[in-house]
Image (cartoon, rainbow, N blue to C red; front, side, top):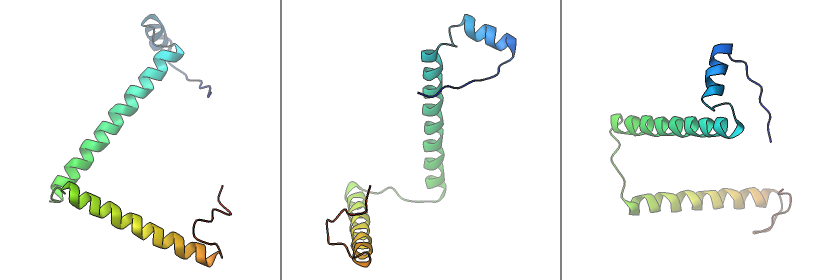
Length: 96
């Protein structure tokens, strides 16, 4: 559990306390709501950037092919790295 200390103007603190917003659960909910809004804005900005860049939508088949290609590339890199380290395929030695 993290303990956070904040400084607020007395008037703001009193109004927040009166509104029930200074409890642990209320502050947690406020932070979660703020993070959700921020993530939503980031998603909308990314969508706008994609549209402005003229990137065409991908079909599920195209997305699936991209994911498979990236996974295969990752496996190839991991295999090469493991070989350089003297590990056998599937050997997790040295990993936490």
